[in-house]
Length: 265
Picture (cartoon, rainbow, N blue to C red):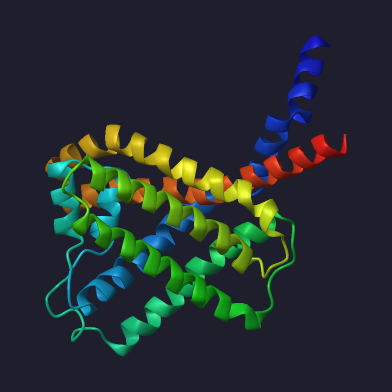
């Protein structure tokens, strides 16, 4: 009987409800889908953008290096793997552009669906595809600009602090706006604020974890499996990013509802 009461108490608690909804949302499954679609979307997209600009050429590889907090040797392996070919623009075909667009819209749709399920909202109509396209373009611009800043702010601890602060600020603003935009403005800004904060805190924590765990694994896996080993570690990191993006929004909703219940009580 006592064990039953403990189990019921856990089930009715804030953490228990959060865990239950995470299971109903299939959080791990969605994170793996996020990683798979993110890999086939963001890698070619950022490589093409990096090849098109007339200045620096830091795309997906630089973003991974910064996001994972990689040291010199792992960073070199990732940069080499995701470096842009010299003739990437001339070699881009109409079919590859079409495939990239389809994968990109599917990637944005997966994030949108997760947000809708978190807030228990109906599916978006077919003509909302433009929102996904705009969100994907904003995500690409945010990641690309973040990667480029690493080329200019790498000359001391002051630059490092400025860059870290800018990355956190712009990341917070993007995820705050991104939730509101993909949800079609159905949820007010204050309700989405905790989710944006939780997402950025989760990404900061994931970076610290990656620098301690994934960074040495890239070296060992590269020696054992070659480029495939590096891809596997990057894919694991993207699964973590997906878990944080979806889980942060879910956590934010529970924080918002708990705060509302406390105020009403």
